[in-house]
Length: 252
Figure 1 (cartoon, helix red, strand yellow):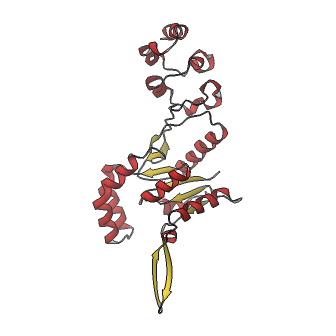
Figure 2 (cartoon, rainbow, N blue to C red):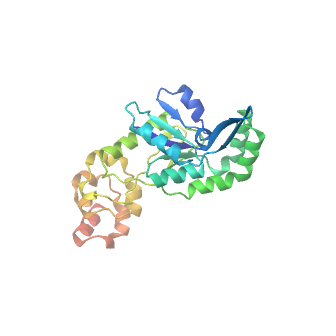
Figure 3 (cartoon, rainbow, N blue to C red):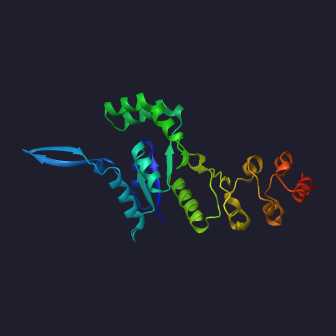
């Protein structure tokens, strides 16, 4: 199954495409945003009115192909992200912290980006990052570098969800450059009572116990009890039935 990754400029997707053993397709927005034309022996380009729908169609085509790539990189442009959202195509977005601004501007200059590009990124850095942070549809990965290990983790996570829609996901995952710390919390709490025990390791039980309401059937299920953080449940016992409250008190 292909994973779609929106990569912020400078996180290393070009280098990764060259060095990774994964099959990666990097979609360049320019190819879809403009149409090249020749008139009077002069070459010029004009905006493509089908953009970004044409780019989204390409993503769908790649995902559905028999020889689908492992990873599909897409631009982090606002209109592309909005189109992915509208199309219901789940994706990961990898972007740096606000404090990484100076390091990234230097990185752009070192790799040969135009001064116009560097100045634009410098002036709009905060707006670009804040725009991404405020979006709730993608799965957020805060990192100044994308690695093959991260992509493999993304694939494992996506495959897990494909195997069982019973696992609900948190909308933000913070990670070190080469060590993804999955923090999956049931906010949607879909089919909790039928949760497959095989997916217990995909749940951040500490965070769930502290901030969420775990179904009584899960609390009473002995195979899950060693993972529950009882002290947090004890502070919120009023949420649960009398039988469950007794069980919580017994385990605190």
